[in-house]
Image (cartoon, rainbow, N blue to C red; front, side):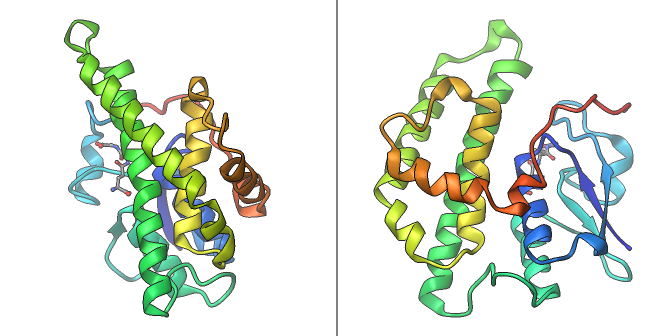
Length: 212
Ligand SMILES: N[C@@H](CCC(=O)N[C@@H](CS)C(=O)NCC(=O)O)C(=O)O
């Protein structure tokens, strides 16, 4: 059996979980709850992934792999079922990869903001981090609003998946941002994304923190 180091809080893991559902691989992957704390990484995990990050997939009979995009590629390569997440046509693939990077980039901004807000000692917090993160969120969301028709026009792929999960993550952690306000086209596109069974089945959740 393949083992996925997993958390219901992680947006990177959620990308992979949506991919696993889309590709019909849920019976091929067992999830194990793994703590991913950048300030206190779990020591045992370094032997599996030297970066001690999730998602990490321990494959049956093959070396482990990590990074959400890589594990999504694994899902796409492993199963013919469902949408082709990384399209073969060169231009379509580049668009998919660029949108994939945009969604992941939004998640990275969210992570930076979360660390500054909640993990950094309040005396050492830097207001510039808050400003830059908010500016990047706004710029990316405005860009996506302008490109919602382009997203609608392309068949579902890794780009949609990544952007869609990033927006779900904004709802989960940054509700105060009210990202839908003035962005009706993006909100309408995301409504369709959020209704996909793969997305419904993988909701974010603040579960109890596992023991270190
Ligand atoms: N580029 C990686 C980022 C993964 C990542 O940073 N995951 C977080 C959990 S949301 C983590 O493992 N953090 C622990 C750490 O940074 O030590 C990916 O796309 O999978």
